[in-house]
Structures are given as structure tokens and as C-alpha cells.
Length: 111
Image 1: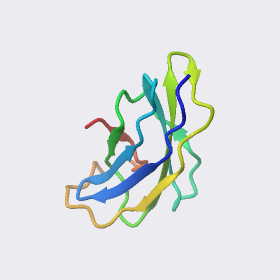
Image 2 (image 1 turned 90 degrees about the vertical axis):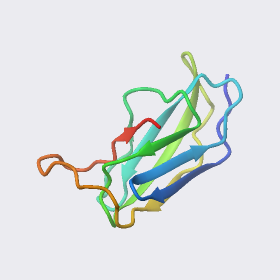
Image 3 (image 1 turned 60 degrees about the vertical axis):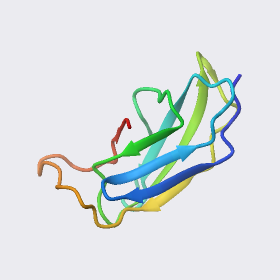
């Protein structure tokens, strides 16, 4: 059974947020949970596991604070608990805005 990552870091970038966390020995992947704390949203789990120890989140709203945590997995086994919560506030992005008919929710993309 994998162990819980001891740390997680969220860093704002020109294109969104860069996430990194401690590698969990024995983990085959990680479930990433995220929420827009400014909007009062609940934590949502990404639909697919992340097979790495880092991730980039794009399409975030400038000025909003986002929170994240991961749970290490190995097959159907989950770590005994989640990583610590990492959070950051998005500064002014240096990328083009998303389509006007799509509401930003902090959807993540791979790196």
C-alpha cells in the first residue's frame, strides 16, 4: 500500500498553476482533488489518475485562490490519507483568455 505524500506545493505561473508533491513509494498514480476556494467550491476529483509527481492546472481565474491535494494509489489500494493541502492565488495570467462560453473551473492538463 502506498504512503501519503508528506508535502505538496502549488506555484502560480504565467499560464496557471504548477503542482508538485513528494513521491509516494509504491504508488502507481495519484488522484488529484482541487477546488476554487474564492468561489466557495467543493473539492472535485479529476476523472483520471495522474501517473507522475507533478501537474499543471490551466484555465484558472485571475485573483482566485485554488486549493489542491493528492491521494496516492496502487491499483485499488489508496494511501491511508491525503497529502497536505497546497494553495495559491492566481496572479494576472500572460496567456489568452479561454472561450467566453466556458466557465473557468481549474481543470488540469498534463505536463
